[in-house]
Length: 141
Image 1 (spheres, helix red, strand yellow):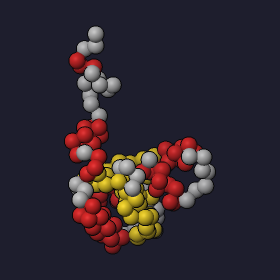
Image 2: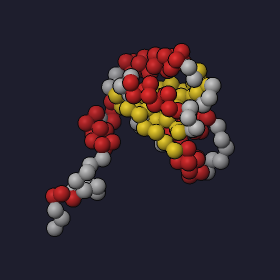
Image 3: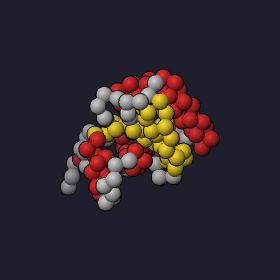
Image 4: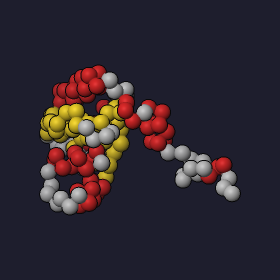
């Protein structure tokens, strides 16, 4: 018989992500995938079920661009009645660092992904072309 300490695959240390999703409810989550770049960044907004709320769009890698991103996020959050925003950002060079800091300071939950992971996701989809839109879909996955 297993001890009650091990009633979860991770033992007594539960996954903070699993607890966050469980407490929030999947129907209340908005996912924002961001492909960070030097000058022009790209984002996609969807639900956790893959329903695209905002098709891929570009915004400047500046404070003005971030304000635009924030405006789009808040508008969609309100229109769709969502409670929490999870931002996934691919770690490319150092371009992602400001976005992570700004997103966290605005109360978004930030998940960073290694660029190798998005490349592997594209490979699993048997799609070897390199485009920002495919990267956004890989970040969401």
